[in-house]
Image (tube, helix red, strand yellow):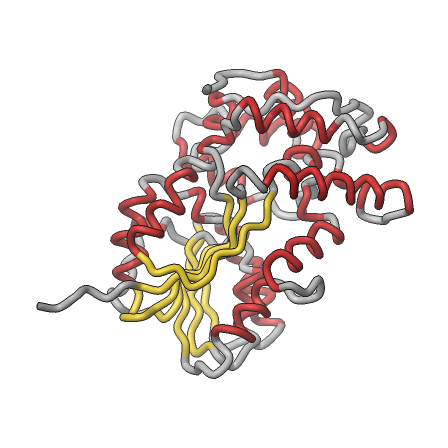
Length: 329
């Protein structure tokens, strides 16, 4: 069931006002959607309290993907699937500040990495970091990928880290843009949100999220940079989602079906997020420096999510897929 407006929308606007200022809120009233998207991603040095800032959550991701809390998905990819490969060409669409692409560029496997993003400030930040590291095998392009001429059958890897869910018309994007840019046998690598489009979670998922929220004591539920208590999760409304960023999860539910129709699955590692992402939004700062109390809380949350995932598909996936070559008569 789609929700047009919720209480969480009001709370989110108040938080954005405190964290990013009135000019950022005004930018969301621009009639041109692509400009609203650019404003979302162009701000630098913006701090949030989302689940990805929690070290123990990152360790959980690593365990679920690589089996080792100290091995992230990039090292897992290099060590297990690219170990003996050289002169690789990779393109990343929607690379942002390109932190992950820069880490990959440090490996001798890659001859060329191209990072494309619409946010100029992010691209400039990435260029500066790569220059300081004296990386010669990576370049950055500020462009809308729709207006960028991606060469056919040129790349060994097409890479997405938390960006594919910002693409509209996923079926066409996967079957044409992504697949056609890969060499025969080339790889699509994703670390992505693949859950409900526009974050329109089911009633069952929202109920479980609130069950998890209720186990957290009040002292750990005050929102970041606020005295407001996170009492209940309602989920975002469609109107606010579109105003905030028209690209956010615009066709996310289509990602896996489109990939499975066009690629051979080499490996697919679900790592949850169905409960944790939403429970910990705005209160994650309480769980960075752990003591025995908040460590136990996290463990309980992990268990609740594990139980939920037994009967429900994961909202986040790390996957490696291979281009299917056409059968010749």
